[in-house]
Amino acid sequence: MDNKYITLLQRMIQTPSISGQEDAVCTLLEQWMTAEGIAVRRVGNNLWAECGEGQETVLLNAHVDTVKPAVSYTRDPFSGECDGKTIYGLGANDCGGSVIAMLATFLDIYRHPIAGKRIVLTLTAEEENSGRHGIEMLLPHIGKIDYAIVGEPTSLEMAVAERGLMVLDGEAKGKAGHAAREEGVNALYIALDDIQTLRNYEFEKVSPFLGTVKMTTTMIEAGTQHNVVPDTCQFVVDIRSNGLYSNEEIHALLQPMVQSTLTPRSTRLNATSTPIETAIVQRAKALGIPLYGSPTLSNMALLSCPKVKFGPGDSARSHTADEYIHIHEIEQAIKLLKILIE
Image 1 (cartoon, rainbow, N blue to C red):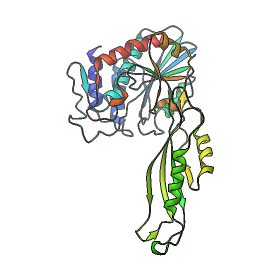
Image 2 (spheres, one colour):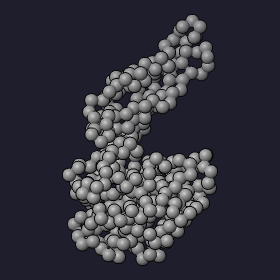
Image 3 (cartoon, rainbow, N blue to C red):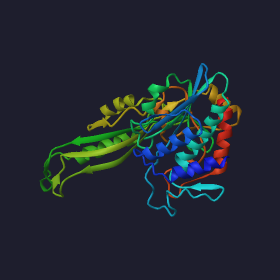
Image 4 (cartoon, rainbow, N blue to C red):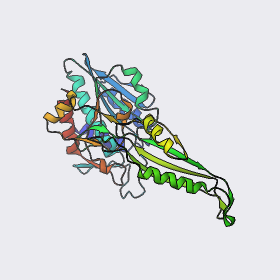
């Protein structure tokens, strides 16, 4: 791999790009692409470029934002340190390695177009916070997409399905009263009964790649003081859908089962899956690339075309202290991306 890509990844790491604050890293990448002769366009803190002509359009997407650094880092998260084999720092694995792999692949195709294919590269913001100023801002400009490869650390395996996400805010209502006289209706008990109902519920439809829908109650809050029966109780349920139910269907199914009011924060991040018969999936199988269903959310959820998730690095390293990626992982990703697109 050309040293210019290693240097670029180091510079990316050295340029903080916490989700929602991507302006500087977007400018860095825009200037780099322009210097390489790529006609790059910018919408907000999102970049896109295209090359080639043809009836088939392939979208390459990777995100440029990161989470906040974990407090347990032992290295400087923004150092971009490289020992010749490994690059360290926040965003190296998630998702700097994929940005570099897709940039290198795109630049090669930009200079040596593939007959019959239009390739669109998008480097986008606000993936980590599921914001609305990321890839959704670019899609109206790009036009029809036949299939997409979303860059994420997948250990060079291919995710053909991905869990969706819906967060429900639950609110139980009771009646306040004096605890000593057992007055009122305890909203906390109503919430606990509802949480138990949700915990015990089993969805019928099971996905071959993603399994069943997963529900986890992660937060609860009630009460003002020890001797007052609480008249309200709030709780939060994290739901990871499996593609066999839309988020709207899950909400409609659960609400009649409980006394509490369940309010979705958003229903737009549905689970996704791409049929095994799709050309790029068949190409991956022919190359011996393992297929799997991903438990983590990505920009796949915001694309309506056939799509897969693929890239260098290991998902287990994402959002952890002392994040890193091996250079050979990026090199292998570049080779495989070109073959997959062809």
